[in-house]
Image 1 (cartoon, rainbow, N blue to C red):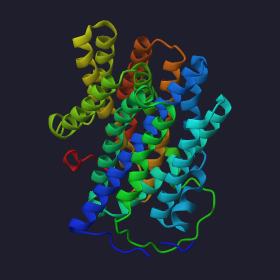
Image 2 (image 1 turned 90 degrees about the horizontal axis):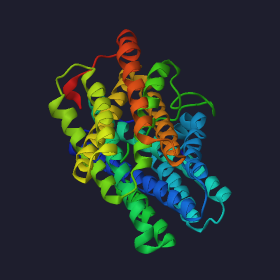
Image 3 (image 1 turned 120 degrees about the horizontal axis):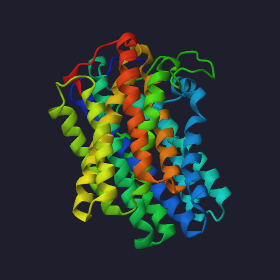
Length: 385
């Protein structure tokens, strides 16, 4: 297929509107992916499968996310990015619709692997598009914006997936859950994308896939993401997921206003403490306290995941931005899947989240942050996001 000539990134209103459209598309795809998590979980529980097998459906998705990785650089350089996005979303739609007709655990798990691979390519294409549509001085801002759109879409999609089966039935629920992903293709369609000069790439490489030097960050993000996944697996009511989404919006305010000029360690430290406090309040408080707890949990999760993205982006040089982004995505998705599967398997969520958040905080304060200060390529600019 004909490849992409690099022009300067679009400037002014056109470039900004294009990047915003890509962020909206990311939220729509993320919404459908989260809805499929809740739907397949409900589907397997309704079929009588035990908790371990139910949790395996998110682990299968996480496995699929890793599969295309070594081909990432080849795919981006050899195919139009928008067409790559369309193709991956088409695979996601087809496999999602097939999930509604699946009758055995093997079929469901196999389709979940396919969905994970399609999601990985779609998110890779969106991450590349949003950077190509932005000047270099704004790329950290748009990367953060894209991640916030997806992060807020996660509890919203889970809420829809938890509500749809009882409201419209299983088959129609899967169709409606995939409508946002289909709409994402329409959102991206009018965006003008600059061409890129063809580069000769090896078919398999770590470029745009995995950043080995970020291993300490990976070890720290994994338990934090697993704690978030365990919370998402514990909450079951659509309204509770809605409170988590509102909490994520509060996390945006914390990042951009309350902690904008604070110490580098403040956002992750306060976020993990909010997750721990919210977990205790949710487990032992009443109905009114649960709302406050979920708001705290959403704000804490949002802050922690957002600041870790900045750590990944600031560690390597500019030429490794896409690789750092994908490493962050793989780690986050794997952690969320592990935590969600643990909750489905019956691991006590209160003590599990406290243990994971506490270990993540200890690693961050005593190991990860001091290591990062010595090895980072660029400093933080607090107002850039």
